Image 1 (cartoon, rainbow, N blue to C red):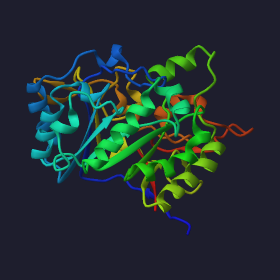
Image 2 (image 1 turned 180 degrees about the vertical axis):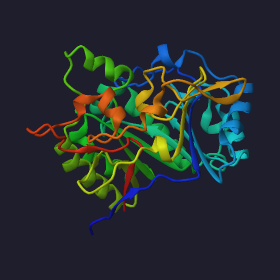
Image 3 (image 1 turned 90 degrees about the vertical axis):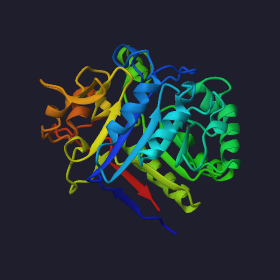
Image 4 (image 1 turned 90 degrees about the horizontal axis):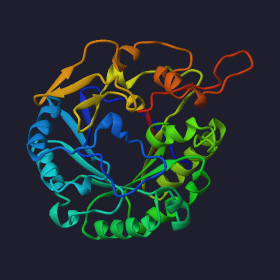
Length: 336
């Protein structure tokens, strides 16, 4: 049976916190978006975690927090951070590369953690490890199995690029075998290392052409949903009659780094144009022309940040008009 693909509207009155508790990582993935020059090389202290987590939650009726790195399980205080967040009333997710350092599975629990999310970029060691490093596939899948055995709700993130899109259709059966409950398909962003690799013009483009994305991703998402796996993927391209809306204008998404920078748009993270800064454990709005001022601009291409920061992703007709309007990168679709 054909699955329905539903655009997931931005949630008004709901806050999403993406908290990078450190920037260190044990891997060196070719598409890593962490930029130490912009995001710092430190990690949050226990005191900062204890004060930032409730401060960032605010008074919203519903709040979600995702703990990120680098690799967040490298931080010995991650279990404390998870427990603090749950006490504050967050829905809590940890995004891991699969190594689960510091006995994380033993030090946390399914009662405290709503989802434990793993990153895998290929259905076999040959494909995944080409992108993420030798031995990563085996370690990640073994720890997924351990997490499922311990009754954690497990999700998986697959970052689609020109290197691995042709293998995406092999992922749903693997996820079903592993017991993964949610599947996030992500589009690669030209940030951090992936942006650097494109600047020298030597490496082939990591971006996927619109026709390829539209012919592959929705179909695979439908396949995964048919297996009972909740599947979400970026909208990316808007239809001719669909209006563009920027999450920065209508939703509360905060991307927080250990040096105190707080962005509203992940595309901006390579630049010092963050909307907020955490100072003395308080969220302070910055003056001047920052990302939030740019969100107000309306252009035919849709997302103004995409047009400014990664214009090569836009295809134009012979008359100079964009073939596709680019959606906000935070706009999602759900299959099922």
